[in-house]
View: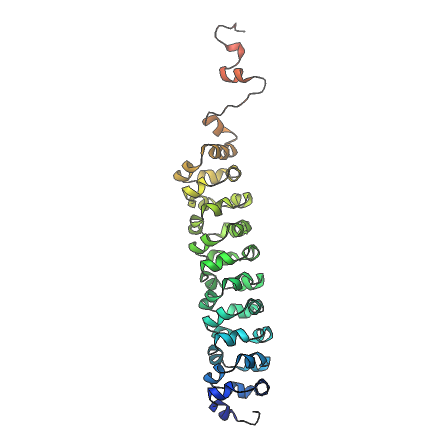
Length: 309
């Protein structure tokens, strides 16, 4: 094989290329690898793909990589995956990306992750999304994040979600935000929560809002609070409601304020105004130095007919 000219290599038929032994393939020079026709590259057996040296892999033309069948992409070793150029990564078909194993995906460098196009990112299997390292997740471009399917977003681990940049959080669409699991919502940092757009906040499901930690609730901006739907507000826990700040209570929409049930609204207003809500809702407050009858009628000394001091 070494003695064949590049023109002769190019002229090899698909059948001939498919018949090459692994020993012959490993002896191809980089110029010969470059000379392989697209059809020839697509004819390499999976066994031959797996024995290509890293130098040979890096020498392959992008159109040859694009011609790889899914079985050939899946046959690449992790050592070979690491040396793929960014142009080669960008050339892998969406079917090829979907064929990558979880082991192969975890070996992608940050530059290779950046090289993935939106359609390629959207082609990643949920199992592969779940094994992305936090460094790889952080390397995803905002366009790629926006291209993630809801099933992929739901597959993100709490560790991955916590490492999303604020720009990536903003890039998430309403349907994607609504696809976050409750554990992922609870894992969001306060910085990430504050970065969420009001349209995404409005898209949160009741279970997701109920999963917010009290620290996250306190971090909500007034615009975000205003964006909460009535149904979502009604799902707030008593603990969450009592943590609302005065500005947040004021920011509640008319419908949102009405959605708070009697006990929860009382807790929120008590937190906001020092107990004034309990007076408004008629809750009994024991007064120091007096019993229930004193509280109810103004004190024993003021009963009708009692002597006045």
